Length: 171
Image 1 (cartoon, helix red, strand yellow):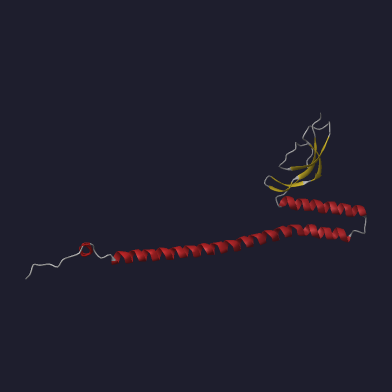
Image 2 (cartoon, rainbow, N blue to C red; image 1 turned 30 degrees about the vertical axis):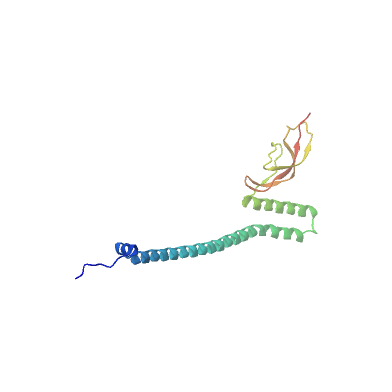
């Protein structure tokens, strides 16, 4: 037997010193595939959630529109009745129109938009819109003297501010 060995290169020595890496690479590839699959499923779930949410939101909007329209139907019916009696006694028609207006104001109140048209209160730019000023010695400066158009709503749920005349400072 010969004790002579073949010469080895540094690469041969390195490959003999390290165990084969094939199983570890396969484990990483499998883990990567699993993560990609989970990621794709999460994206699909998110897309389905968006679609379902959009459908639910549309359904809620339609239900709210129907509820609001149904609240206005009695007002429209009473306007039709007032028009049907337009040829009769004018004072009765005026009273009927006033009753319908009161009914419409009540519908707005029930929908969360109460009417306000107070005079003698301090001017508040959050709920009042100044359309003019008057020199009124009997009123405090910056006080609502006359309401030209009532406002509806309160706080952040305001449909429109009240159009008012405000007393100006006396000089």
